[in-house]
Length: 186
Image 1 (cartoon, helix red, strand yellow):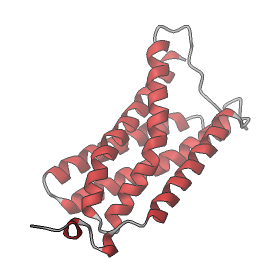
Image 2 (cartoon, rainbow, N blue to C red; image 1 turned 180 degrees about the horizontal axis):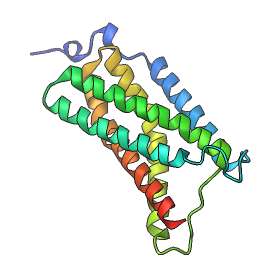
Image 3 (cartoon, rainbow, N blue to C red; image 1 turned 90 degrees about the vertical axis):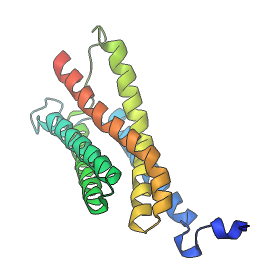
C-alpha cells in the first residue's frame, strides 16, 4: 500500500505558485496593453505608407509557427525529445516575432476593418472572436508549459501541453485564415 506522500512530486519539483502567478500577471498585462493598442490608441500611420507588408509577414510567421508546432508534435510522438524541443523553441520564436510584428502593425495602422456586408461576415467575426479569446488564453499557457519543461517538471509539462498544444495550433492556423479573409475581401 502506498501512502499519499509517495505520489507527490519532490519539493524541488513542485512549481512555486508565485512563478505561475507572475506568468499570469505578465500575460494579463500584455493582453491589456494589446487591448489598449487595438481599441484606444490612435494609429500613427493611418495612410498606410510605412511597412504595409506587415500583415503578410504576420501571416507567414503564424504559418511557420504552425509548421513548427506540427513537427514538434510528430517528434514527441516518436519520442525524439531533442527534435521536439528544437521544434517547440522554433514555434515559440516565430510566435514571439509575430507578436512584436503584430504590435508594430497595430501601432502604425490600427485595426483592419472587414466589410460587414460581406456574405463572409458571420463566419469571419466568429472566427476572429475565437482567435482573439484563445490567443489571450494561450499566452500564459505557452509560457507556463515552457517554464515546466525548462525546469525539468516533465509530468506537469505533459499534462498542461495536452491543452496548450491544440489551443496554440488553433490560434496559429486561424491567424493565417483571418489574414487571408481580410486580404481577400478588401
